[in-house]
Length: 164
Image (cartoon, rainbow, N blue to C red; front, top):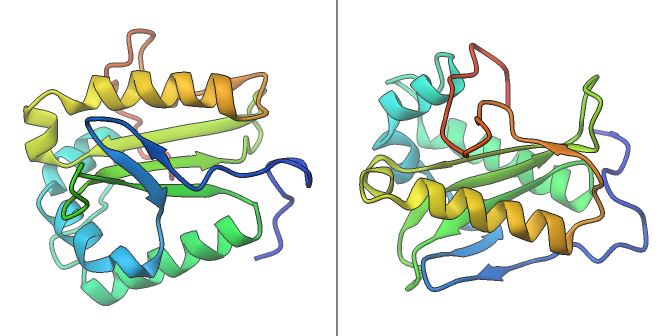
């Protein structure tokens, strides 16, 4: 993958965001089992959010590992940045945050995020959204960002098949 860097060469990419509710860390193969558990426990929610057949019921740990390898490579190349959302004690993946290039949109970055079904049911989704929104505004070099699938209040409106 030889994508153009998403951020300037002198920008120091954040490697963590710590809050009382969760921790963000780069999404790498080191968390494949935690991530896989979050994905597979949230199939219906994720398909509804992203409007496509991902993850499918037969999605394997090996396929998930390949996704995480790709995310790690993108992070290293500064082409896109994926973060795992970990529980405060670091033992559970609560979801993910993806900071992606704009593609053909009139914006500097497209940002997606999701939380596992159990965390969604406990109200973590709006907390994550508003925390990430503030983090992007204060810690990243983007003037214009979009949150595809999100309404102005941060709630979800299904994407209809857009690939994250």
